[in-house]
Structures are given as C-alpha cells and as structure tokens.
Amino acid sequence: MTPPRPARPAGRAAPSAPAPSAPAPSAAPSGDLAADAAALAALCADGERLLAALPAPADRDGAASRHAARIHETCRDARHAFLDHHTETVYDLLTSRRTRRPRLAELARTAAVRFPGLVPDRALLAEEAGRLQAHKEGREIDQGIFFGAVLRSPRAGTHLIETMLRPAPGSAALLDGFRRTGTVDLPTVRLERRGPAAHLTFHNGHCLNAEDNRLIADLETAVDLALLDDTVRVGVLRGGPVTHSRHAGRRVFSAGINLKDLHAGAISYVDFLLGRELGYVHKIARGLLTDSPGWRGPLVSKPWIAAVDAFAIGGGMQLLLVVDRVIAAEGALLGLPAADEGIVPGLANLRLPRLTGARTARQIVLSGRRLTAGEPDAALVCDETVPPEEVGAAVERAVGELAAPAVAANRRMLALAQEPLEAFRAHLAEFAVVQAARIHSPDVLAKVERRRSRTGSGT
Image (cartoon, rainbow, N blue to C red; front, side):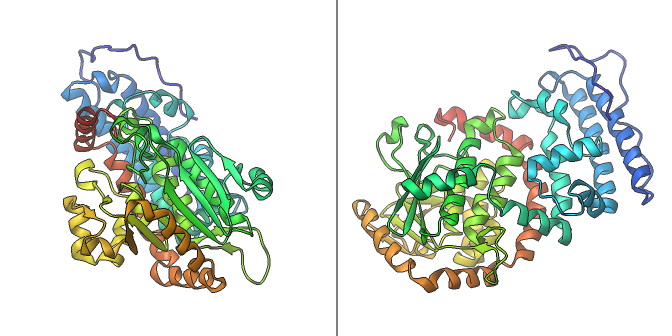
C-alpha cells in the first residue's frame, strides 16, 4: 500500500532547498507482474512524497508547478509502461477472469487497492474533492491512462463495454413501479409512458438543462427503464421548461455540460465524462444488455426520438447523433462548442461525419460553426423542422411511425453497420486518455473561467 501522505499546511511556502524534481525512473517492466507492480508502487509512492513536499496546487509558483509536472510525468510514464505489459492480466485479476462485472468507479477503486499507484486511491481522490478544477493535481489523467489501456484491449475492453451496457444499479428496483404506474420522477428527469412511447423529460431547468453528474445518473436510469419495459416501443427525449432568467418558462433541449460545475471541479471524469459515453448514450445508440438466455439474444434495442426546443448545444447535439428521428423547432440552434471550451465533444468526432460529411463536421467541431434548424445543412442532422408550437404533434406522428414492429430490428442492424463495436471501442480508448488530459489543460481552465464569468450561469 502507498504510505500515508504527510499533512500539508494550506498556503505553505515552497521549501528553500530545491526538492528533487521527479522520482528516479524505474527500470523497464520485466514482464513479471508481481515485480513490476512492486516497482510501480515504490516509484509512485516516491512521487507522492515529493508532491507532498510542494505547496498545494493553488499556491505553487512557476518552479513548483514545473516540479509537480515532472513528478506526474515520470509516474504516468511508468503507469503506461506497466499497463503496456500487463493490462489484460490486471483486468482479469480485478474481474475474477471476467466473471465479475464491476462498473467504472468500482473497477477503479479495486485497481487502487490491488495495484497501489496505478490509479488514485480514496485518500488522493478525497484530497481533490472540493477543489476548483484549476487547483487539482489532475488525478483524472491517471484514471484516463488506466481506462484507455483497458479499452485498447479487445478482450478487456469489450468486457467493460458490455458491463456498462447492462442496467445501472437501482434501475431494476424501479421497474415494477414504472410498469404499474407508467411514471417515474427522478431528481432531474421525469419518465412517463404514453401509449407505446416512454417520454424522458429533462428537468435541470436552473442551468438550461445542462448536464451534470446528477442528470447523467438519472438519464441512465430512465433509459434503462424505457428499454426494460416490454410495453414501450419508442423512447422520446425532450427538455422541460427552464427557470433560468434568460429563458424562464421556455422549453430547452440542452445547454451541454454545466461549465459552472466543471469550473468548480464538480464534473466527474469517471461517472460523467467517460460513464456518459459508456452508459446512457451508448445504450440509446446500441441497446441494453440483459441476462436473457433466449435465442433472440440479450440485447434490447428500441428507436429514439429527440424533440429539440430552443437549442441543443454540446452534449445536447451529441444526443442527436445517436437517435433515429430528430424533430426541431424552427430557429433552434445546434452546435458543438469544442473549439470554445477546448474539450472533446464526446464521441461526436466519430459520429458527426457520417451525417454531415467530413468538411461540415470539421467546421462544427474545429471552428465552432452552429447550425440553425431550417437551414439546408441543419437538415443533415434534423429530420423534420416545424414551428415551435407544432413540435409535440410532430413527435406523436413520429412515435406512430417508429412503433412499427420491424423498426427496432432494422435500427439494430443499421447500428451494427454504422458503428461496429470494435470501432466504438477503439475510438473510446483514445477519448478516455485525451479527454482526461484536456480537462486539466491550461487553455481549457482559462476558457471555462472566462465563459463562466461572462455568462454568470456557467452554461
């Protein structure tokens, strides 16, 4: 186990004598798991002692920040080298040879105990909790290295993907009630069955239905229930009325990631940034894995409709790329402000070019171009554009069309052709590492602060 970290008084000045800038790099992995794990643990423990000798991240000057960066870089290189040799063995040990199915957070916790130094443990994560994003050590990068390695492995990565396609904890307990009453009210999502459709309405109105940790968890539960209920044949996503002062009372589909929470360090890398792509978004795109042993297979897939009122920005637009029918109000804005925010827009880089072509996708992702429902290029993403007051009626017509018995089977076959599991896995493996690094990049932290200050809302 990693030794306890020495207490660090807040605001302590940097030591007068220069501390070593990084632990001595260990030898290249030998291929022996026990020996390599011990070497990694020792090197990372040295790194933690050196970090503890520095001021807290918020109090570091340029020299101390460079020292910390060298420490982290040495430890991250060692983690990468260790995983380059041992990922599949490590994963088999953590999952009892893939007979257990721990979700992302549990897998990371188990890895921290079984292989000290590989990923941050509870104490290190607790130390980060409550800090502004700009004042963190960047422990999510270490998690990204681990999950990226797991996802690069066809065997381990596929097992993890399939684990995350299963119902989330707690979903099954709500299923009987939903089947009986046709409604479930979660903190930020209302699920209501109307005829053959399950309507998922976002109720995160204080922040323009922006996504935060709570909304991500509630959406996965609601998607699970819609897919598990045999009487539901179509899912509908729509934003509810918001309370934000600029759009009070209006329906808004989604403002994307909650930048106020990102600035505050309250956006989870594991549960939100990675868990979102492996969880509810992927379940909408591919379906839900159950324990059904029948000849039809364990995958439950249904068609989905998105009804876009006002705007679908960032993560909101990403959802439009995985549903089967997009109905937009005239004038609704669509965009992926990746160029402005500096982070990677989920898996839009994989999915958007299929709809818009490469040139338009580059304009949207790299230059921040926005589309307006009703203009020609927006028709590449939106199936139907109607006056705002007619969105509800258009949704009902679409439900009638997509509830036909053959639709679910055909959309499943389309998904297999358009986004094979191997393509998804390979893309997500790189996303896991790149996004972890981006959320700690100086340009992202500066942009999030400027945008949060400019808008006041943080969205």
